[in-house]
Length: 471
Image (cartoon, rainbow, N blue to C red):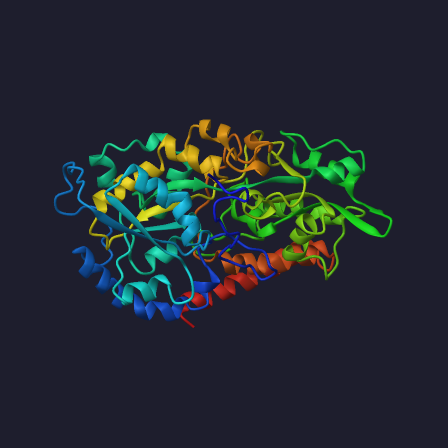
């Protein structure tokens, strides 16, 4: 039976942007980015170790090993599969309840073993100590954790020989893999994430303002935020706030953090359009912020702890993972652009990757395939994770095993149509850091948009070039 508070999932994101904002598993994670160049020296050693385990040449990642040209018989011999993740989303108990028990129930001969990400269990340390990781799960932006140590493995041949139907999956999640694997497939999406519109129902009741509705445009949300921004007694109530870093990461215009030349696009007209839409909310009378309240960490605390912000645009997963039953919240669909009706934000899925070093690839693929089955996806949905399937049938059961989620507007956590995925970038944290500086400056009215974005672009590009040069 599911625990009332959910299945052992932790609201423990893996990347901070400098103002307390967090990006779940973005590519350029501080745990890795601060040491990224130092890590390169260890890659050759790790690659050699991986190659020794896999029998393939370092970096081939083709997914084509001897004997995989025809379907392998499904062995029922006892097998242990070692799972690992850098995200920190689940502790060992949480993993067992969400994944392990179901795997064991479906495959009695399989023993899932999970290594949680704690101090001393980085992927590099595990590999150099001789540990063999069979399945690594990471969000789409964390792929560098896999590729930095050359654990990526193209499972295209396994998909073919096992007649796995990619058409069942949310198409954009497959598109992301095609970009990450240069046309191949490294992993299958098991659960999804994106951003959505949260609101505090009690505040709307308090001030007699109708609740937000599905299908609102950005202008509709702007007008509603204006109505909610006020001071009541000695308490200031903001009508609106958003997580800029997350909104940029999965933005509706599909603007990447960096282009093909590894340069940020902050000074372009298209990006200014996006940035202006976000910052204008903080110029509304009563919705202003100051130097003490502009940071993301303060703003999200005002929403869910102090309960003085009416609308919050942030990661959909924060509802089940952080907000829980702490206050009377609900969701509506993400605001639409007038010229892009029906288009939501991009997806931010978590993939389960069969590693190059695994000697149990067939068993691992059978298990990962099961995790994308209708049966298992319904289990995830019932326990507050978002399915990664094209069909939304599983979402009809969203939160049914968690009392505080049962009454939520489950259809609005995910958009009817995701925006096209933007090109993955290795420099998200650099871009997010400088974009946050620009965002705060414009929100505080200390700089105009053109100046703030030009300076952010120059600073980000300089830092990226320094990192690329190895300095």
